[in-house]
Figure: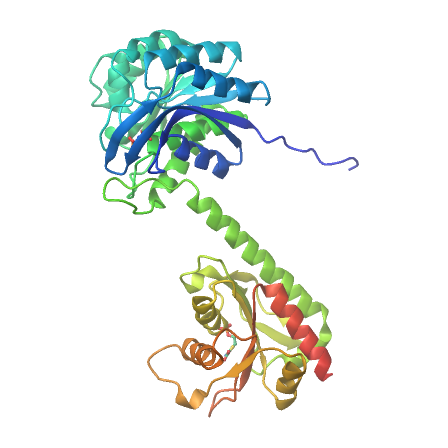
Length: 448
Ligand SMILES: Cc1ncc(COP(=O)(O)OP(=O)(O)O)c(N)n1
Ligand SMILES: Cc1nc(C(=O)O)sc1CCOP(=O)(O)O
């Protein structure tokens, strides 16, 4: 194959919505969702709410010209097709948004936000008819929950049959598609596309966690997926999963309904990817330098790296089955994976408790010569005495903490001279796995 690989353009998406000072719903939820899904997020704020997890205390609506001006600033500069609306507050703002949507030919996802789950109106009563008459007919899709669908359709929605009837009535108002989110009935969403006679069911799972901002997150993820070119059914399925994960990863802040966490998974996935990549790179450095083999202890060696938010062994990437001497080189026995180390992982845990940017370690053979080389390299060195280790906690955790306490910080080298049945060992610590691998290779060269 010749030529350059295609460059994918990052879609730009806009949210036209209110701000939530508590950081859970509104533009905060929307922009986090856009970032997590890899689209560039822009925003036009309609109202500034003084809000927290217990409800909306006050709302300061912006003048319609202020909303128009923000939309204009975005649309005259950027190539933007998809937008979503959230809190629109007043009939004047709804009218202005309808004008701008027409002017810039925006494809719109309308989240008919009416009230906050924890309490507080977000759309004035008189604005509802303007919303249904002037804005809804311009939209590609609307994403009401059962109670919002009931208000839009003018019927109570308590079952799937009610939801089907409501979806048809809402579609008759002129919107191209309706997705009624299932939270208030069961976990199944219903997608209805105008002009068809069939409903698509998007099953989900009731998950435990904070739900504040879940409606915003859902509609924002639909907009992001559509901007990437997904069809509605695919977008609805992806958005459902995304919201479930955001609920599961919610963080308990405040005294009311906890906010969803649209970014959690993505950040951690990225951290895990980077840690795996780092350890693989480190293993290659060790394998490519045969002199390193001389540093491998009888029990084998391992090299590990923790993700920044590490809490368990499963958050530390290392080599399955360790690295052994084979054919005059250091050879990894298995793959690099999370949870593959106990000893080296315990050393890393104890170090990062003291200094969070020290996230990697390797164990190598102990000898007077190796210790001398560490001194020559002017590395910070500390040690512990395995004969004194308490039986009830991890020896490595205890020993590393002892050495750190003795040194007054985290040194680059921690050694022990072993005890009966325990091989003496040197551990090299550093910020990342390739840094400690390079240190090990340098050490090996010095003792050749
Ligand atoms: C400023 C603002 N916009 C929208 C909402 C409603 O968000 P939603 O995702 O429906 O979540 P709950 O408020 O129902 O938890 C809001 N609260 N604030
Ligand atoms: C057996 C052993 N002891 C070590 C020490 O630092 O004392 S390192 C080590 C080998 C590595 O083990 P793992 O794969 O559990 O990290």
